[in-house]
Image (cartoon, rainbow, N blue to C red; front, side, top):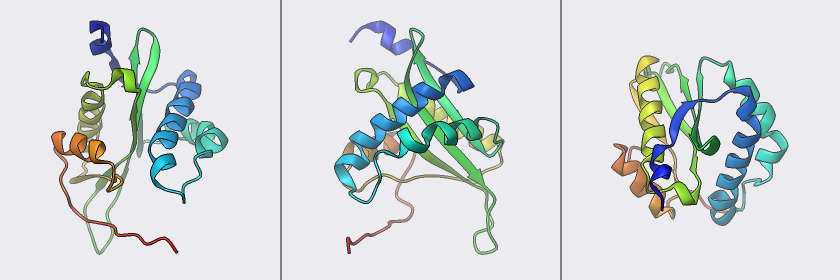
Length: 160
């Protein structure tokens, strides 16, 4: 792995990044849900991604980041923040989507994306940050634990 991989820069996504965001999201779906969750439509990014990413760029409650290396998008993060409810009156930031291309893993690119998300979440006044990972995705769980997340709730599922 060459040193230039370590220099991926994290920045807010721009309209011209949308095709790369769709590609990054499609790769995430194929690698993660595509191998772990038959209930997910892995064609969603190609069908709906561009429209969803475009509408999110101007949404103050949504953060869309890209990691760029040598002028190429090598990863992304999407996060949202929502106001609490009467039952749970805290503002919650949710890390909805994170992907770093395999060739750029182990370079702290993912950690930099997460750090930028957490900074943004604090700026929004969030008191809790959440992320969901598949229980069988040990690599993702280890990554999130290394980046300060720990078990909070556990969702159990049963195919019907």
